[in-house]
Image 1 (tube, rainbow, N blue to C red):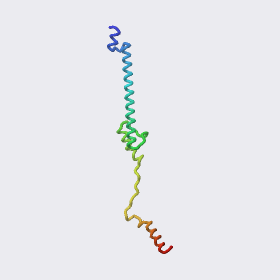
Image 2: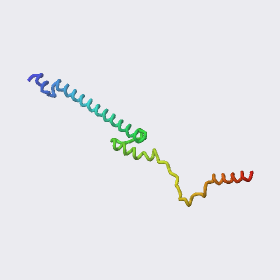
Image 3: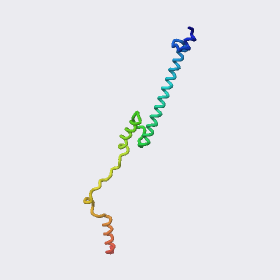
Image 4: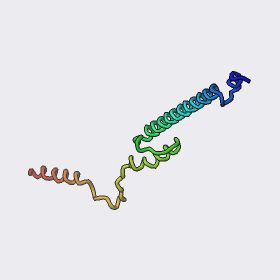
Length: 116
């Protein structure tokens, strides 16, 4: 066997075999980098989506999956956007008698009648 036979069979001990192994390693690195970038882009899209849907700043959202981000946004929503407190409405028996403005208007009417 000569060196050309080893190179064509992919024997790792030849210079050509070493070069193929180096190129395959580089390809694997590039594929891993591309997968990492795609994952980062997907995560950024999830954060943007959850932030817009819940009106919560993207900087404070935490989670590694879409479901975790949504759950965190749901937990933060009552803190960031509290519901307004409604005043207590008491029963009719606890309301003041009549309207004070109407009473004052009656007094003014009576004073006008008496020419004051």
